[in-house]
Length: 187
Picture 1 (cartoon, rainbow, N blue to C red):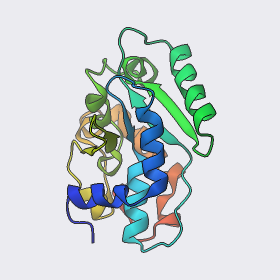
Picture 2: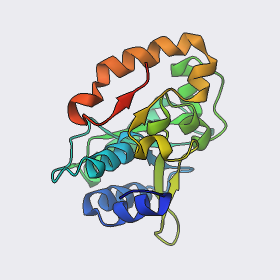
Picture 3: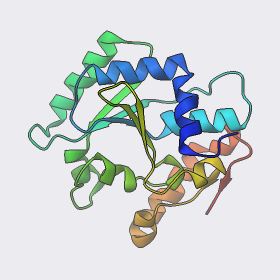
C-alpha cells in the first residue's frame, strides 16, 4: 500500500522503465528539472488499481527552469536530444520560465512554483534524481489526494475562477475514470 512519500519513491526505484526515464533526463543536466504530472500519478494509480500492465501515458512531461534561454527552440532541442537518446518514451519538454506566457498567468519563480500551479493536486507531482542518483519527490499539496485517488483543483485554480472552466474541460477530456475506475473527480 502507498501511504507515504517514501513508498512512492521505492515504487519508482523498483520500476526499470521509470528509472530509465529519470537517468535519461538527468544526463541532460537541465537546471531545476523534474519529470512530473502523469508520469508519477499514473504509476501510483496503476499500483493502487493492482494493474499488472502499465497504463499508457500520452507523454512524459519534463520541465525545467532556465530564465537565460527561455525560447521554445531551446526546449525542442532538448526534446529532440531525449528522443534521439531514448526513443521509447513520448517526451515533452517545457521550460517553465516561459510557460506563464502560454498559460496567460504571472511568471513562475521556479519549476516547483509551476508544479504548484498545475490544474489538479493529484497531478502536482514531480520526481528527479539528485547528484547521488537518489530520487527526490516534490508534492506541493502532499500526496493524500493522489493516493486516495481524489482529483480536485489546486488552490491556484480555485482562487482564479477563469481557470476553473479549463479544469472542468480538462477533466472531461482526460476521462481518467475510464482507465482508473476507483478515481473520484471533484466537479
